[in-house]
Image 1 (cartoon, rainbow, N blue to C red):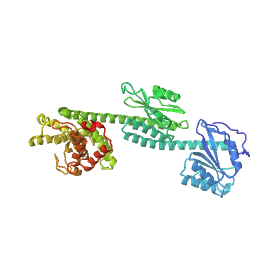
Image 2: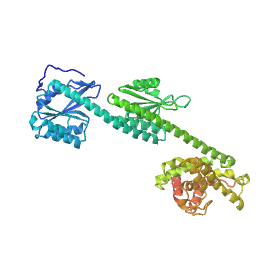
Image 3: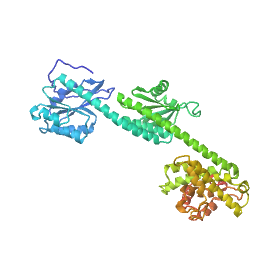
Image 4: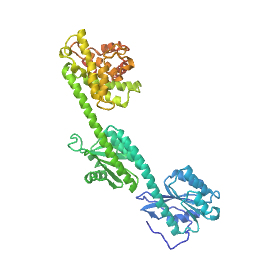
Length: 537
């Protein structure tokens, strides 16, 4: 806080209203708005306080010469800390009416307002203090340089405290909202981008930011030790690259990131600010962002709180990912078990997975079944589809491996695989709350031999009563089986397969699912390996 000349207790009038030459301050200045219709008052006020500083932040003085001009200025500058406001301007009560507009129309309750009047009888002090939301009331003759200094500093201190309270309130609200958003993300890259977005929102700053993740050799030997996982603004070219490539372009930032990881503490060294985040499973992250001014204590405290929420959200994501991988491993093991006994099907289940995903995506593009094609369904349909024939573990070998057609009795036994698969998977899925690969797999295993007209097995379900997952796999299973060699048949050409499927629309197959498959073929959206050996030849 700088001192000013305390020997002169009179107004310092100066005809020169030229503002002081502006320099590039290291810290954001305090904005003070002078609203008065007398030019000399502006000159004197500027001369008295222009070199003042509070907490190493200079003043930025703004001028308005009428109440309306002051209102317009406040619409442009919502961060004015102090308003030195004349009462009598366009009208005898122009200043008082402006106070009401500031508080009620602009909803600005943070700016400190000091009324100054040369005609105290025009607006009695007690009445004004009681009826208007102002912070001080002074006659122009009593505002000496020293008293003006005291008034300005007291007002800035009060404004700073109010802003800190408001920033804490808004910041904590944004942290709670942002952390909740992070808990919904289901991939590491989405998570990293979400962190940058939320930090930008908490600080209300620009979008330039970068998030790096440290990989230990135990965690992933194929990735760099430190990689850029998310980047926005000027840092976007670094996305997905080793952080070492940052060194030639941003040497100071790279050095700060290394220092942060070594000390395991956030580093605030404006303009290079780096947050340190550690998770329970040993993963470490660093986040750099670009605030235009050095962060205040309240902002640092909010960021440290957010870092704790980020760590918890990442741990949640990690556990979710591990659980998902465990489920996928279980599904693959079950599918391998079924395929191990039926080795002639080759890579059938893998192709079914890809085709099921592709058809579900095409149905979504068509706008079909929007209430059924939920994000969870889209995530799980492909993996769950590989369980469609898991019930064959209960089929006797002499029937499963018979090279020719099955007789009626054998057909009855073979058809039991649908019920067996549904029973096995339903029992397992009951141990997991909500939808899972196993619950969707149970639908598919039990329903992929149902016919759209109700003549299928095992439950003679019809139309929409057949789960969508099973209706998709019903088409996919037949499509792939006909395209590839089986013990009882040679592969069919693609066109014959599609003619066969088209001939069973509305009887065996859902017409929208068949339409989606035809669109995929017409637009060459399927890889060659899914179209059969004859098509590839």
